[in-house]
Image (cartoon, rainbow, N blue to C red; front, side, top):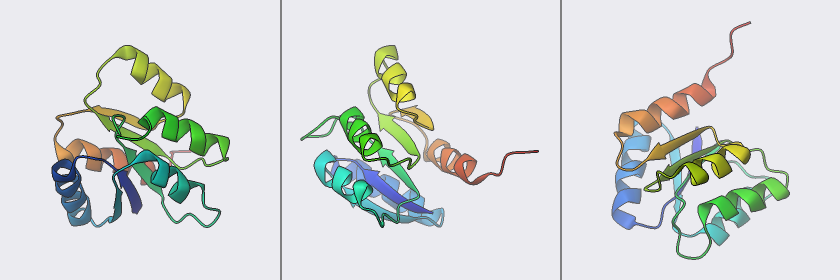
Length: 123
């Protein structure tokens, strides 16, 4: 799976990217929201999923989602954030996120969330 990891804290991004790569995922890391919007809005976008922090230095992660949805992108999104508030979770849900993980979380939860995205629904 081609994963776009949008995380501004280098240590956290490196840890998650390493774990995702061990899980056989191809990972691109971007540390800001605007470049992520650009990458995800490309007509030939090759990312299968975006793993997105909400607290980014330039624009909020929820704004990244709003903008890519406005461009017509339906790429699945998994939120990884320190924000545990219900309001953020509801806003993320309205934007169609696949999962909402509150930091700190075990990497196995992120890998399980990605695995659910590749499962085929039962008939």
